[in-house]
Each structure stands twice: as structure tokens, then as C-alpha cells.
Figure (cartoon, rainbow, N blue to C red):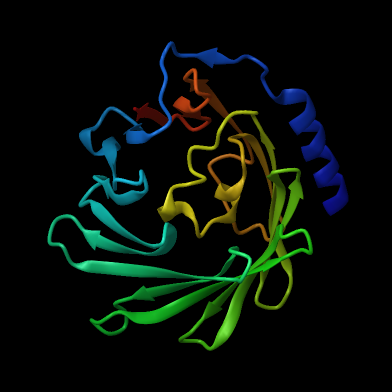
Length: 255
């Protein structure tokens, strides 16, 4: 049954991806803002702003959704060290994520600190990353510090520079769900944004244009099982307008 579902998903990926490409007459590769539009209410529309240092590294991200979050980002010799999440309203610290590296520069682990159950930040989760002999990410394991056990394992399968399949296993090693991806041939705007680094799907070179989700538990109700994403691009091949199947639109501004 699982094999049949996967074959069906691959066929959908092959036959259903649109080849229409729309470009804006503009240049830019430095992302300045994203405008989200989800509906007609004020709460459904918000902005995300990006700030940079003199080396053009992102040092602050301000997300104004609902109460708002501000991410302060730190580097060590140009390499991402950590980012801290603050509430914009009262400046309280909501989380800190710290990154460690292997000798070859690949990410070894991400340490997630939260103020729960104590008010001060304590280590909550550890994301551990494993690689193939070609230095391609193969697994991400999530360790719950409070429970003192691994709670999930995600495996990744690559096609050149893009992840074409992810598979999610629970703490007992049972396959719970998996997703197939197809891509455009343009630049993935999320790849170099630090706050997206913990999700390896954002490490892909290009932008996802279709994802096909297979749930083997019956407990998940996604927005769509076969999701199509449409893009407009600028002349530097970065997306300027993203439209998701469920209606959300993102308008991206660059300089």
C-alpha cells in the first residue's frame, strides 16, 4: 500500500507541475521584507522585516504576526552561532537556539532553550544531524531533554541539491508520514535565513513547487495532501510573489 501511494505521488509530481514562469522587471537579492496576506481581516495580514550588518548577514528578523516576535541573530567569524527569540510587545525572551558544527563546517546539532518549566532558559530539545559520506544530510534526530529520550527521527533523500523526499519516524522507529517534493530551478529565498535553519527542507537549493504528503497514521489533517505553490520571480531569480494552495500569499521585497 505504501509503495502504491508513493508511485501515485511520483506520477502527480511528474505530470502536474506547471511550466509557466512569470518575471517582474526588477532586480534584487537582499531580502528586506515579506508581506503576508491570508484573508480580509487585519489579523490575517502582517509584515516580516529583515535587518543586516555591514557584511550583509541577517542580524535581526521582526515578525509582526499577532503579538510579534523579534529574532536576534549572532555570528562567529561569519558563521551562525545562535538566534534568540523575543516578544516584541514586552521584550521577554521566548527561546534561544544555539548551533554547533562538525569540523567540515556542516551543522552537528542545534540546542533549543526555552523558559519552561522554569522562568530562566533551560535546554529543552537537541536536534542532531547526520550526513552521508558525500556530506549530504541523511537524518535529523530530536532528543527531548526533559524526557531523556529521542522523540522523532526524520530521514532525507536528495536529488542533486534538493531534498526530494522526507520520512518521519516516531520514537519507536515506526514510519508515520512522508512527503515528496518537486522544485523550480530558481533560488530558494529561505536557504540563508538563520531562523529557518532547523528545518532541513529549507537547505534545498531551489523553491518547492509541489509537495505530496502521505500519512500512515490517520491522525493528521494537513491543509492539502497534494499542494501546489506558484511563484513570480525577479530578474535575479528570487521569488517576489508566492501563492499557496490554501490561499496565503507572500510578497517579497529585495534590494
